[in-house]
Image (tube, rainbow, N blue to C red):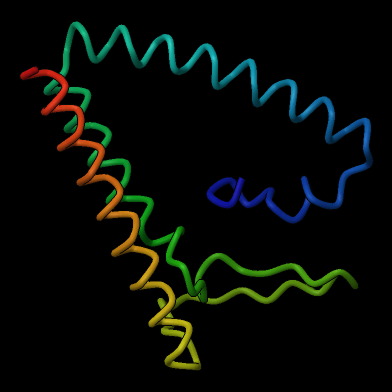
Length: 120
């Protein structure tokens, strides 16, 4: 939703709108995961290259301290930015790096566990 610029609009929706959105998200995720599974089985390298390109391309919009995607305040004012800002407080960046390190460690542990199970 952030990439499409609809994040604030979805969060501001009524309960029936959010329910319809959630149902659509679940159905879309189920269909896409099936398609992605088939594509990975049949065209693994190409799919991984495309996914890497999408992730690198979306980095500009998904930067954790956005100053480039805009923000819509509840009273209707929209602030648009154009740069990749760093956090004001150094603690925010430290938290971001700590969470990234934890995620990396968990991913590494899962990969090692899977390889150990595979070889056993």
